[in-house]
Length: 223
Image 1 (cartoon, rainbow, N blue to C red):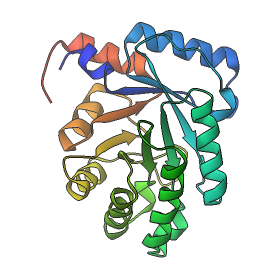
Image 2: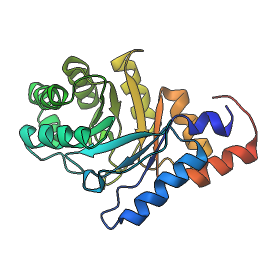
Image 3: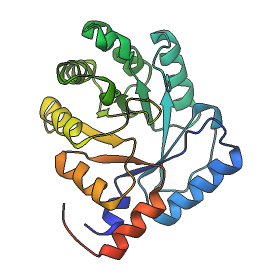
Image 4: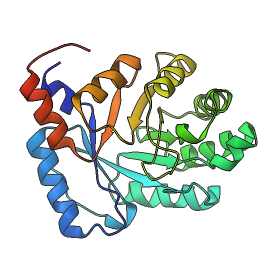
């Protein structure tokens, strides 16, 4: 894949607590220049203007996932009202650790009901903090609740971000019809290639320019 092909599956991301409106404006300009699929920002930064062809993703229940379902649903609905096309919500990781997958499903379903299609709903499972059984459980809950994607990580958890093993297990669990987003620590072309080979269909990247520069230097290749 060329650097342009890689760019078209990147959510160009800025979620730092200290981010300013000027930072978000620069992010959007850079995303348009690089040709990324979307920008992913915090809900407090809305509304923003994005050029045609660039999609807008907004996080929900971020980064802890410990908000009530009603709060997550309201946050997601408000973000969509202010222009978000995609919502990246964080599950209650503690519920997953306790194997309360019905509660995880109900949490996701509440947000799904608040932001029905065509809004894209991605479910952040914080895979580095979960065992394999728990990853499978929350992925199944995401499918049952009507999510469009499962996503590895917030990028803020001390356990770490995306791994090839987690992405592969997520893909195997959700099958071919759901998206899988690898996010958290994807910084190089080699990492991006490995994630896509494992089954990722979207990448969450904050350092998109450096990653794509590496892709351009390597020339066209294949995953």
